[in-house]
Image (spheres, rainbow, N blue to C red):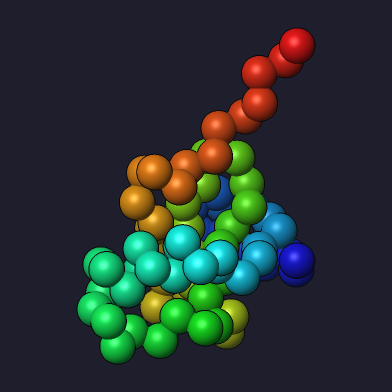
Amino acid sequence: MTRKACPTCGTWQDFRKLDDAEKAAVRKEKGPRHYVHDLWRCTAVGCLWYQPWHHTRGGDRLPEEFRKEAAADT
């Protein structure tokens, strides 16, 4: 993971590469030939933002099914 500025969160967050399910969702949305191997996702709770490594301009939001909510306190 690495820290990058997330335009959705408005702060610096940890980013990680998209997993296979997330890549498939992006290809479903953008088309089967869309390059997904250099896309990074914000790991903040509730954030769906992903982007290419070097710029936010090529970024977008993952579908709602990929939203990670905060774990309930036990």
